[in-house]
Length: 115
Image (cartoon, rainbow, N blue to C red; front, side):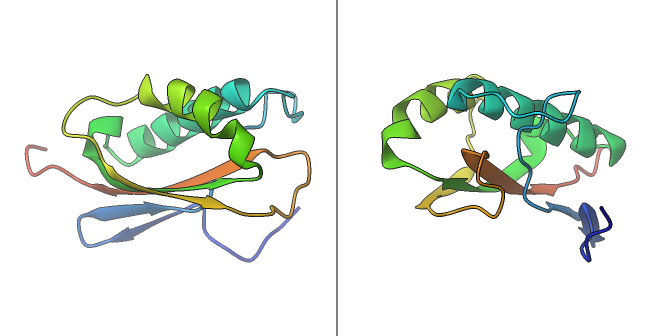
């Protein structure tokens, strides 16, 4: 499917990622929010690496969850990916276009000057 948006954009030394959904390698979505979170974070990590960044370069995350009851398991899975200083985060309860998706995450990272 050819969608009218960019997966990633560079603006100066900032890297902006479009929302990421937790697809498995075969294109399916796991039923559990913790697995979808794992896949989202793996995709974000790989996309940032293509731009010369790591998860430590993320300074802002926006998370869209489809159900407030998913917050605790999501948060537990998400927390494993970050160390201090943690990025700022906004978590929003929202319906997603892909109904099987339990969450979507978008991030902004800052390229370090040590390249």
